[in-house]
Image (cartoon, rainbow, N blue to C red; front, side, top):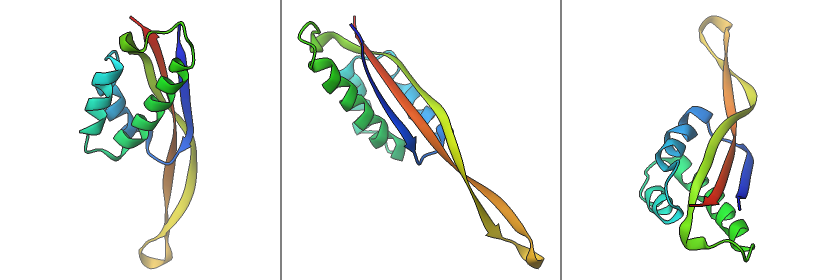
Length: 110
C-alpha cells in the first residue's frame, strides 16, 4: 500500500533539490530521515518536511506497518520560473530566472 505527499511551488532550484533527493531514494524512512537531518543543504529541510508528510499519510492507514516503509519513488519536477531583471553596465538589463520545484515522495512497504 502506497502513501504519497507532494509539495508544489517550492522556491528552490530543481537542480539543487535533486542533489538531496538522490541521496534518499530507495532508503528506509528512518535512514532517510537521518540523512536529511545531517544534510547541510537547504533543500534537506524541505525534502524532510515532504517525507514527514508522506509518513503521516501512511500512518493513517491501519494496514500499513510503519517499521518497514521505504522511499519507493521520490522526484523533483520543475515548476514555473519567476522572471526578474538585474541592472547591468551601460543601461542594459540581464534576466534572472528564479526557479520553483514540485517535490513528490511515494512510500511503500518492503
